[in-house]
Length: 142
Image (cartoon, rainbow, N blue to C red):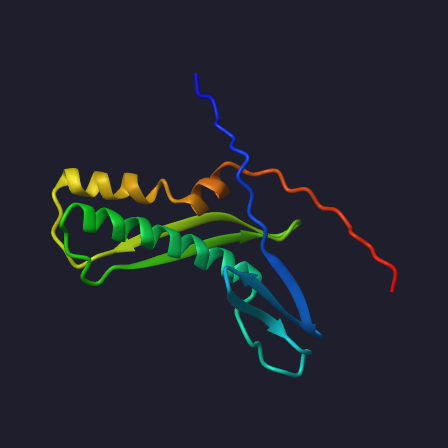
């Protein structure tokens, strides 16, 4: 029997509208810009959906890099590609194809270990578990 452990750890990331359709997210002292001021200006950052896909790739890349370092395997040429299949009604990603690229010869045991390691990435685990999303409004007087 599988039992999920749910801890009380929480994380809050604030997103703020800067101007028009341009927003920023503040994360641990960093800022990420998404959107554009209006339809006549170029985007000043990736869309939130592309940031989600990039987060999965970055997470897998970090787990791969940790595995390779821990097992004294060269990380030469380490890249991660994430391809998606999308659907409408509602608009969403229905499949992520994650490819870890590496210039190395690995044993079967190392291949199995690397794939097991990257499959434990936090972002991937979150997406696989279909987390509950609760929306609320916090209105203040102007």
